[in-house]
Image (cartoon, one colour):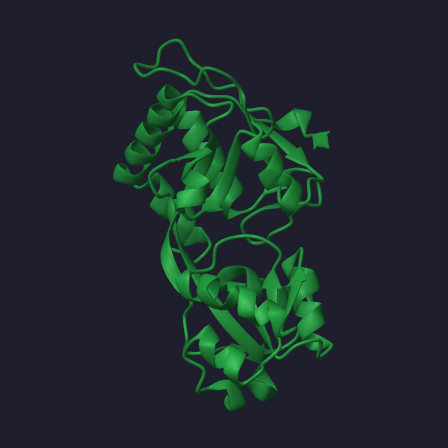
Length: 255
């Protein structure tokens, strides 16, 4: 695990009227453009990184970036209090046992995509029950929440050998391009970015939208206090009210 020391955001200013966080907050930079990545200069970059920086600066808190932590390990470290913050998260009863959830800070749409020249034959898919009954091969991220319908059918799709998991969207789109499966599931912005700018393979989104909802920051209950949650929530609300978060999201075409 590498710490990007040059990007500690020490922003706790004594003149602020609200309380700063009780400790520096650690977060992992994911390989997930356009939301999170390490840029050509070795710096954290992307929409979620910019939103995090703005939120924690407004809160008067210090944010510590780490890299080279695989997705599944990140979640285990978070549960154990070794990684304070996860971003782009959807609340679930299981997660709420070990994490605080902030107020929402941006919207998210989960989509289902096919190769553009093959998409017409999947136009009738309206649920993952259709994926299962038609025995359609599916590529999906190796962890995360992608809606109730996906959760309902995931075990049966796995038992039928229909699901292959990927770690990064670059890997997932390359698997789709190589005909490893017929469909790919994931965040619409990430799939479009990878398909158009990185792997350069035409894809088409199906009409079925598995999930569309605001996303939140997760703060580990093992390492972050409820007072810290209130501090971060207040910062998000102020930045939403003054238009700062909206302007950042608009730069990436997401509002």
